[in-house]
Amino acid sequence: MLQEQEAHAAEMERTFIAIKPDGVQRGLISEIISRFERKGYKLVAVKIVIPSKDFAQKHYHDLSERPFFNGLCEFLSSGPVLAMVWEGEGVIKYGRKLIGATDPQKSEPGTIRGDLAVVVGRYKHHSTEVMALRQRRMRLNCGSNQRKLVNYTSNAEKWVYGVN
Ligand code: IDP
Image (cartoon, rainbow, N blue to C red; front, top):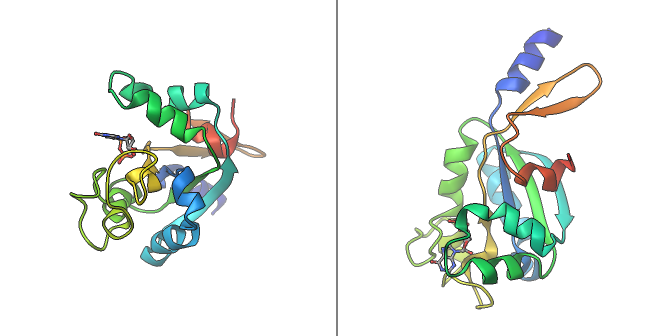
């Protein structure tokens, strides 16, 4: 039975999702968490962090060539971020649907960005910074005493699990 549970946990899909500083400041934490919970996903880890600029740059390293990269990293490290790990079948793909397109002008009504944001870009009111989505498949290998992250693919998990 234990082995079955461990096998199930090892298969369960997880994703990292963060609410950036303006979403936290606008008081949208409960709204965003409740949308994921109502859908049926499980919040398996959460913490508030203020990432360093260096950390933000590593987190967004794939966007380093983009013109908004510096501003984005400055913004991310400018205040508290809510870092979360959500679990459930299809959560990587469907989580993206719940959040909506990166550009709120293109996100559908009913999505988080469609309902709560107006423009893409930082420091603007109702911006897309509401939600940072860095999705990575995470598989947890449940050992006897310790949960160990395998297929460790990005810095994102460190935010929540504090793994070095
Ligand atoms: P995501 O946040 O929807 O996953 P990414 O492509 O990972 O989208 O982009 C990360 C962040 O970079 C976005 O949340 C947004 O704040 C910022 N960003 C993305 N594209 C643009 C743009 O064209 N102009 C300004 N900022 C952008």
